[in-house]
Every structure is written in structure tokens, then in C-alpha cells.
Figure 1: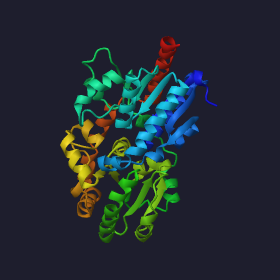
Figure 2 (figure 1 turned 90 degrees about the vertical axis):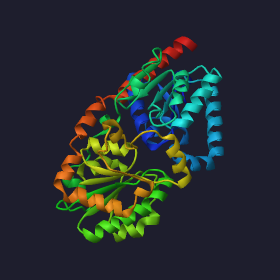
Figure 3 (figure 1 turned 120 degrees about the horizontal axis):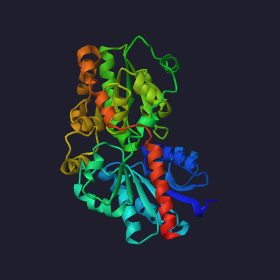
Figure 4 (figure 1 turned 30 degrees about the vertical axis):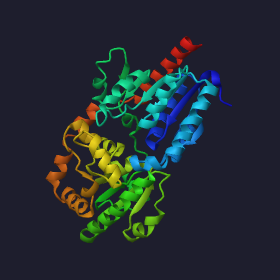
Length: 389
């Protein structure tokens, strides 16, 4: 049974949030071994002791159109989560990413004067779209833990708002479990030939939109360079059975995200869906291509509201296109094959691509994001006890 007197609620609706929050939980247990946890998360959070109301796999949603099809489910989650919090009376709640749901839910808690402190990990991307949300964010969260270097400055004019740059969690998570030789042997890779690692995404809709194009891209590359090798790194929840005949035909290896850092570090090139993986490639010092495709309606809406030049986090931080971005119609087999060939046959082009990777990594801050976030959560746990009893 959950100890309500030392209870912290956690909400992470995506696999990356599960990873980040699990690390925070481990640090919280070091600070106070008696803390208990309940909320929404994945396998990693459950291993750290989460009493799960919902699992992250229940939220395999992307894009505006897809969210509309699940709106009734999300309303049910919203209602059930609120009821559980009213019953359990947690001291503090940590909301990790899962942007629109978490912001709406936090605002609902504030509106109804629920006596709980609210900490947010990962700032909503107001620098990319809908900057007007900043007022709502400041009024809603007690503390905001940012993981990108330029975000703290955005909130600087709000002097009484507790906004902290805790550094990027990826710096803590970067570790290699296998040597290059062991990794290559385990997955049947020839160390004398080029290796291209594919990160297709973690949501069902991403797989649906990306995998057909990726398979045709592999086919084009293999026709000209049959000796080049491919490995797909996927999260445990991803099902690739529909594409298994092509995976077998092209002799593509597959591995789980347990060895994602090995895929980044030991590959010659990365093909990555836009998102966290693009920063991981930079940290591992491996160049890559960023791709993304969604349904036309979602893309049309996104074009109207997204105001940044790049969608790749590494490119945003560098303020230049360090990794080529192939979005929507630009994400096609011919472009993928052409750029892959350029990277892997032109040594000067390859070296130039990674010249500024170190500068990006320096901007990510220092290791310890999970510890700093845990300290913020515990600080507000104590404030909650003092304020609410």
C-alpha cells in the first residue's frame, strides 16, 4: 500500500519521460528512503517503485489528428487521475513533458485549489509555438525544471517564478554497456564496413509513417553499396512484425533501446526521427539525418503554429543545420540515399558535419539533471508539508 504521508505523484506519458522520471525517482530515494510514488509511467518508473494508474504505452498518440481520435480516453485519464489525487492527497506532483496534457491538468489542480505543489520537468516548447502560453505556465507551476540551455532566459522577466536550468538528462544517461567489438559480434556486424543506425520512433503512428520510407531508403542504399550494414534500434513497445520480411531481405539487424547508446556511438551514421535522439547522436559524436513525417492535416496545422527554423534539437541549440532535416515530402528514399552516400563517401563532408558537436554538448550544461530535479521536488515536498500540513 502507498504511504500517503510521504507520497509523491508522477506523470510521464512518453517513453522518454519514463526514462527521465525513473532517474529522478532513484535520486529521490537517496534523499529520503521513505518516499512512495504513484501516477502514470512506464516500466522503468515501475521498477523504481511506481504504483501505476496508467502505463505510458496507453498514450501512444502523436499529432493533432491522432489526439482527436483519443480525446475520450484522455478525458477519462484526466478524470481518474484527478480523483486519485483528491483521495491520496500527495505532497507534491512531478509532471514530466507530455506537454498539453500536463499543462491542462496542472491548471485544473490550481483552479480547484488542490493542496499540492506542482513541479514540471521539461519546459513546454513555447520557443517553438504558441509563446502566449508563458503566462499560463508561470501561473500554473510552482517550479519549472528546464533541460535546454536557452529556456531559462525565456522566463527571466518573471522574477518570482522558480525556473531552473538543471542540465540535460542525456548527459547522465550516456553510458556504454558493451565494447565496440562485443556489440558488433552480438549483432553480426562487420567492423570493416559502414554501419547505419535507424531510430524510427517509439509511437505506433510514427512507425506507420516512417518505416515504409525507411525500408525503401535502405533498398536504394543497398543496391549501390551492398556491403553497408543497417541496424534498427527500437523501444520495447514497438512492433515491427509487419516489416519483418523486408528487414530479413535487407539483412537489417535489430536491437532494443537498452543498447541505444552503443548504436549511436558505434555507427558510422544515424537516421533519426526528430526528437531526443538527435541530441543523443551529437553527444555520441556521430553525424546523422533527421526525418519526420505525419499525416497531411497534422502537418498543415503544425506549419501554421511552429515558428522555429529547425525541428532538430541539436540544430536549434547550434542555430544552424548541423544535421540535415528531411521533413514531410523531403523525407523520401532518393534524398535519404543521396545524403547517406555523401556522408559516408566524402571524408571532408563527414568531418565538417561534426565540427560543432562539442560546442552543442557544452551548452547542455553539466551532468546531474536527475539529482537537481530531485532536489527541487523534495524542496517542494517540504514546502507542501509546511504550507498544507
